[in-house]
Length: 327
Image 1: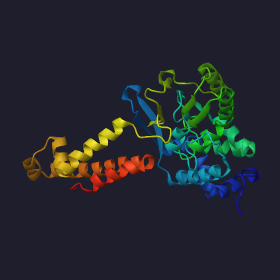
Image 2 (image 1 turned 30 degrees about the vertical axis):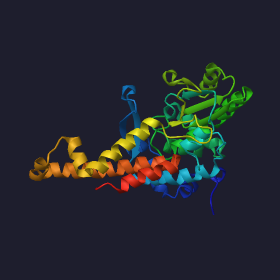
Image 3 (image 1 turned 90 degrees about the vertical axis):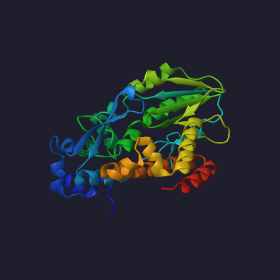
Image 4 (image 1 turned 135 degrees about the vertical axis):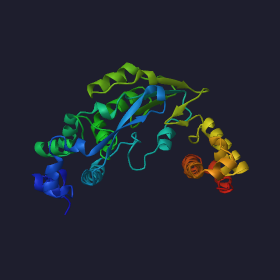
């Protein structure tokens, strides 16, 4: 019989809820235990000038399993509103972008340090809101935070952030409705579109401030019809469906052209500045070429699969070229 959040009375029941032995749960709840189970990594941001993103990788099987089970429980009770498209069942960048097709004005906003702005106390309130007793909520918040903050990289962080942000989503959507605008959020990306007047950004910021968030002013942008309009990485000028940006299509076409023309081995050798003689006489260089070929194969396939999820008809041509490459 499944236990509900509201039915957990003590550590024994919590361990049953999380499918973990009580002794192991007590170990994870010790001071600093969660942090010691993780590896802190600095991932360069897409724009390297903006520095690094701190991500935590869980190395402990115990903690990893706890997060997996808890994530399942959370997703079962979280009823995502129609305007939230990130980290939800059926949500994707395409569906998010599709809400803003062919609009005169699009306002793109970015929430600064989204996960890191959510405190352990805020997560405790999330669990209390789900019906947990205070002591159980405190223990669950310990298992899902590091140094008093919601970490990026935990399986549980996206759904917890969505639940915590729910009341702010409702307020922001209400403001947008007052202005006749469409509101969507994909993780930390807020998009507002209209054929008329956009709401003042100050009002959006005021709502976010009440929840401990703020906007990244350097990423604020208003995009007008007739010029480039991007929503979660896709162009939205077409009234029928979002499209992959032209620059990305050009990049794929160019790489496919040269891979088909020269073959993967010759392409990689040119890329690495190696000759046939270099490869023939040096095993390490041969391995380098082989490794890069495999990496390139997965990379190109991943790009085409992504295009297929947005523009299936276009991807058919790319798949034909991909299959013609001498790997």
